[in-house]
Amino acid sequence: MIHPTDSVSQIATRAGLTEDEVTTAEERLFTLGLLRTSPSGGRVAISPESAADALLAPLEQDILQRRIAMAATRARLHALSGDYLEARSMRSAKSSIEVVEGIENIRAVIDDLARTCTESLDALVPGGGQPEGAIRAATPLDLETLERGVKTRMLFQHTARKHRATVVYAGTLIAAGAQVRSVSVLPSRMLIYDASCAVLPIDPLHTAAGVALVRAPAVLNFLQQLFEHYWDRAIDFAEEDQRSGSEPSDVERDVLVLMAAGKKDEAIAHQLGMSPRSVSRVVARLMERLGADSRFQAGARAALQGWLS
Image (cartoon, rainbow, N blue to C red):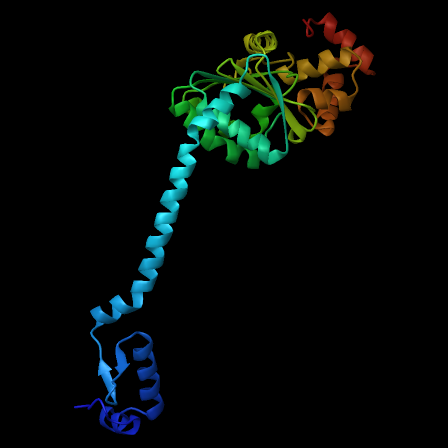
């Protein structure tokens, strides 16, 4: 039996421990609040329940105060909902064209438009295969939009059908109910939400530089017709090229048309969302198949064979 007033050496002898071990144990018990110094000398053992109450009470009080502060902040923010909706309606004035700069601001605006649209989303997505980081960021928001029943149409370029990550992305959207097609050439990236707001890059070559939010009815009507123009000429993204033999594929035909128009490889690559090296390989392959010694001769022979029609 150990008495509360026993010395460290006495406790060590009775417990079969070293004095250092006893000292360490006492320090731990004092830290946990399981031992206290008695006013009359010695130590007093405290029950684990009482020690827990004494030790955790300040932390619980701090948590309570934080929760109260969080609730107050949430209430203040919710109280601003009316002001936000009023400001948003003013921003959505039918005659407005708003410019948004800075990548974070652009993402915030697109996120807001995606989460609040209720009917439709039409998207032109040029550039061939899309960056995998952009795909990872866009997929959850796209799926959430589709889950709300928003009719979604996405239009890629044919070259995106050769990019594995983009193919997987398109397949995910199709499985969730989106309509996805591809076409040879797209003029620019464009998003149209609920046929009431279009998002266009200020500089098509540097889309992160800034965007224009277009709500003017006349401009919106033109942009919607532009989308329908390309959509009607597109094919389903999952559709396989059924041509065989000497007939050119979609991409080869597009390259031929641009070659016949006098475009250089770099210009063709930019317009079709391909790399210049890939365009050079396609051109070399076509010239070999056509038995042509020059690009002009290749275009002429392709026209004679009906490949450019």
